[in-house]
Image: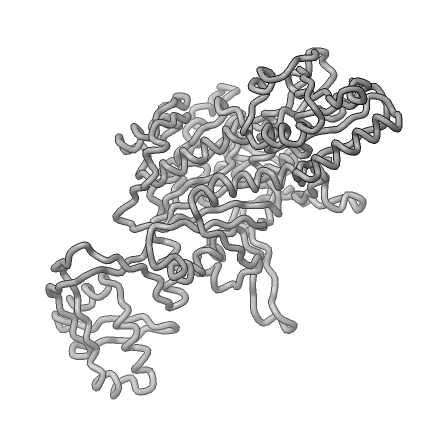
Length: 590
C-alpha cells in the first residue's frame, strides 16, 4: 500500500491517489531531505501560502489566458486526449515505420510543443490519427484551461482557482519577504505544498496526476548580477548535460563540469548552474541512479518568451525520460507582472559602493492644466504619468516634442496627452543607488514524480527470481528497522519489546514482529517494503545481551549488545556510520 487510487470503493477518480503507510512515510522522508538539502543548507525563507488563489493574481501571472493544453475527444465515446500527445505518438510511429511520411514526421516531431491549434489539427488529419483503442474519429482541437475553478463567499461573487503551482504565493509576498530579509538581495524563498491541475488524460501512476506535491524555490537576484557565492562548491560536479546543440544534432547527453558549462555559455549563469549542481547531488542522496539522470536544456521553441534559460531535471525510468524538476531563469517577468497588475512598487534597492552620474528621465506633470482638463480623474492621470516605464516615457516625449498627441493607458481606458500636459527631460543625476525589479531563478520539483522514479531505480529481485526488494537509502526508507524474536516465547518477546522501546526513544520508526514464523520469511517481508536493518533476539541474547543486526541488501549480519542498538541504528540511518565501517568494528555471524 505505497499508493492506492483515491476513493477506490466508489471506483476511484483518474489522476487522484492516496499514500498508504509506507508511501506516506517515504514521501515525508523525501520532502524532509529536500528541505534539509535546500532550505536549511541555503538558509532559505520557507513560507506556506493559500491553495485558493484569487482570479486577479492568476490573470496577472498569465495562467488564466495561457495555462492550457490542446484537447480532442473520441466522437463516439467522448473520451478526452491530449492532442499533442496523440500527435507525438503518431509521428514516432511514422518515423519507426520508415515509410514515405517518415521524413515529414521527423521534421515535425521537435516542433509539436510549439504548434498552434490549427497546425496540430492539420497534422492530426495529415497522419490520420484516430482515437486510441477504438479507432474512432476525433473532434477538432480546442484549448482547455487546466486550472480548477471555484468561487469565494456565499454569493460566489469573487472568482478563484485552486493554485496550479505554489510559486505565485511567493511572488505576491516578495515585498514582505524582502523587508524580512533586511532589504538585501540575493535571497531565496521556498515552499512545499499541494498544487492542482485538471489534466486532460492523467496517466502513469504518480507521473501525471491532478493533485500533487510541489517543492519550489524562487531565488531573487539582481538581473545584472547572477553570480552565486557558493558556485565554486559545485563547479566540478559533472552531470549529464543535454544542451540544445546536442539535441538538434541527434547526439546523446554528455558529461560536463558545471564550471566549464558556465564558462562556454552552455548554461546562462552561475546561479542557474548552482541549482543544477545541487539538484544532481540531491538525486544522489536519495538513491537515484545518476547514470540515468540528465539535465535537458529547453529548445528555442519550448522557451517562454521571457525566459533566459531553462533546464529540465530528467530521470530515466520504465516510462522513458521523465521530467522531475524544471530549473528556469525567468528574468524579471513575475515581479513585473504582479507589480503592474497590483499597482504596488515591488522593486528592490541597490546601494552603490560609490555615487554615480547616471542618465535619468525627469517626468513633471502639469497639475494645473491636468486638473482643468481631467477634473476628478486628474490624479489618476498624474499617477499614470509618474509610473510610466522609461521606454514609454521616451516614446511620449518624442511625440510631444513633435507637436503630436500621445496616448496614456489608465486602468479602464486611454486618454490623450497633449503638448504642455507634462514635461519629460533627459539629464544627468548623481545617485547613490537604484531601484530594480529582481530576476527570478526557479527550481521547481515534483515530489511524486521523484518518488516514482526512485521506486523504479530501487526495486530489484534477488537471485532466486522470487524475493523482491526495495533498496531504499536508510534515510528514505519508510521503516528504519524491524525487531524480531527468533521464536515466540515470553522471554524473547520481552527482550524484543525492550529493544523496540529503546528505538522509540531515538525516534526511529520500526516494526516489531514476534509472530514466530520462519525468520527468513519475516526478513523477506520487510525487504519488500525496503526496511534496511533487521534486529533478531535469539537464545544467545538471553545469555549475553547481544542481538543480531542484519543489513538488507548484502544480508550480512553482525552481533552487538542490545544497549548499543539504538545509537548504532541511528548513526546508520543518519549516514554518520556505514555498514562497512560497522562490520570492521563487529564480529560477523553470517
